[in-house]
Amino acid sequence: MKQSIYTAIVMGSNALKLKIIQRSGKQVQILENISEPIALGNDIFEDFVIKKETLNEIIRILMHFGTAMSTYEVDEYEAVATSAVEKAVNGLQILDIIQMKTGLLFEVLEESMEKGLIYKSLGEQVEDYRALRRSSLLVSVNSGTCDVSIYHRNKLVKNDEIELGTKAMKSLLGELEHLTVNYPYEMSLFINVKASPLKAGIEQKQLKHFVYMGSFSGQLREKFFKGAVKISKKEFEKLYERSVYDHQTFRKEVEALELDWYEFLINVLIVHSILSWSKATALLIPEVSLRDGIILEAIERRTSLKSTVDQDAIQLAYAMSRRYKCSEKHIKYMEKTAMSIFSLMKEPYRLDDRDALLLRLSAILLDIGKYANASNFEKVTYDRINQLRIIGISKAEHLLVALVCKQLIGRELLQISKTKLAGENAFNTRVNRMAAILGIAYALDAGMTQRVHIKNIKLNESRMKLYVDGIYDMALEEWYFEKAADVFLQTFDIEVELRS
Image 1 (cartoon, rainbow, N blue to C red):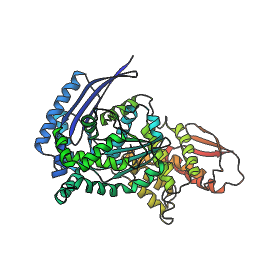
Image 2: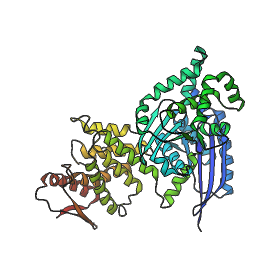
Image 3: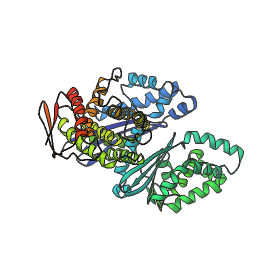
Image 4: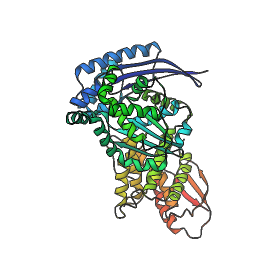
């Protein structure tokens, strides 16, 4: 049986981590699993500069990682730095120096991509993940923000970030401590107010499961719950009560365990606040890992495994379209038609599964600006898509989807984009190809009535024929189709015609 080795390196705010696994069929063997503490987060959040001492320590650790990789003859690896690195004035320069000194090339991971990879890891770690997705609340407390996701009826219907990151909250907590001895209670009130916009949606859905994640969650699980992945709500409430009402005594116990009291308190207060709005009777604190998510994505690329995170992205896009009162029948018609054309174009034009995902997102989000500003809806659509942060979708991919939609609904209807991004010919080609494919689907439902029924699509080297049920009057769709077919010809050098 063929064996494959997968390697992931993560440079986070507080640690450098390496994981090497060997996969044979469904069997996985961990060859290396190393975590070394670094002071990267302190440098960045306090001085906005990565210090030379920290750089030297990072290089030392990475040289050690390189030795481990050589032992297992690792040729391919994925190395990422979390988005905190970009906040440092010298962050990108530091990554260049690291590459020169160690030979390891790091990619800076955007927050939305990091979330997607962690959610991949979650799917592997939770025993009954399908049951969890039917009704659950996921809370991840991080250095910069607190991320909250809602799964309802097996769909990711909401993903929000609230400004309750531990780094900023520590400063506020210190100020409150100087003002009152009851600072934990005052901080709990502050957290309730900041998180309150989520309360109604959580209570309405009566979510049955609660998952707590984040950089501190593992320490809390190990130190207070003997490593248990599942704990009762009552157990956690006892921890909360001691943290708030007996904090002077309890703080000594927490610090005796070599834990940061402020970070501990912030995590407990945030989790308790959001947990109280759900119907969950227990908390799951799984051993999720960004490294595991990276490795799982690499496995998906090399095998035929399907990504649940891609499906989450589609579900979030549909939730957004519903929020803006878009026609779901129109969206599904465009999505189905576009994907039928895409399947024929995929192999000859070397399109891939990522292109398919972005094409589907473009179809779903195409109309989100129409009901907000009728006179300038194309700009509203473009801006709103660019401002979204869909899990597992990069900023560049958000821009690509926004440009596809703008190209289709802009004032110069269905014209090939004249916007050229310097050095990004491949990017512009992807935009034009997706707009050309989606343009055909858009044209065939120009009246949003789904009256054009496609029976079959045939493609040869120079011509695509769409066979549709005969309709006596579809003048609007034919007018749009003529323009869309012209764009398709310019883009692919393929003529498109309707046949009844």
